[in-house]
Image (cartoon, rainbow, N blue to C red; front, side):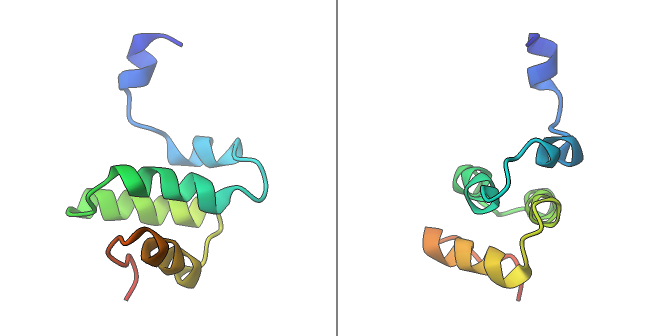
Length: 74
């Protein structure tokens, strides 16, 4: 993979297509652990990722609670 590819923003739609079935929670948790979730772009990214992985708002909030992160959905 070329460095220029790594420096480009992640295309969430393309990314979620390669996620193996049943790994949505784990794949969602990885960026959640890396983010502070203190900005709208981060929240929008996580929302888009959750939608692409077919995670319900309740399931997303469960992952957030498990990791001690602020809830994404109220």
